[in-house]
Amino acid sequence: QVQLVESGGDLVQDGGSLRLSCAASGIIFNLYTMGWYRQAPGKQRDLVAAITNGGTPNYVDSVKGRFTISRDNAKNTVYLQMNDLKSGDTAVYYCNAKGPFSPATGYWGQGTQVTVSS
Image 1 (cartoon, rainbow, N blue to C red):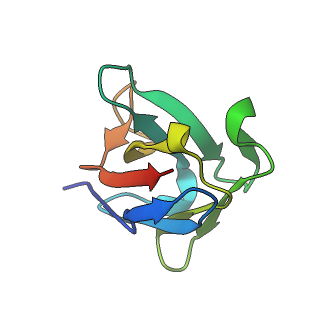
Image 2: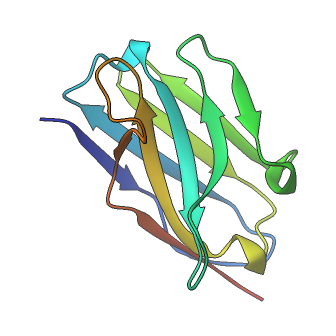
């Protein structure tokens, strides 16, 4: 059974930092592209950052220079370091895994809330 468990969400002030973690089980982690998505109230779920199984990252323009995605294949964990947080970053953040045998939309975690107060 595939499980993605996110952690690290919190309430933080504008300009603050957080690190999200997503621990994966039930998949061959080093074969999967891992991604972080976010969904604000009343909005669709959008990609924030992803990292390929080879370690190549990509980011949505709005977080470039502020967020860093990384992975530790030995720990089956993907991270999202978020710096200089803004109120517009407030959302539920979801971990996603796409790879062999996954559904087209990938596997999803339950999400972790990030709230940035101004």
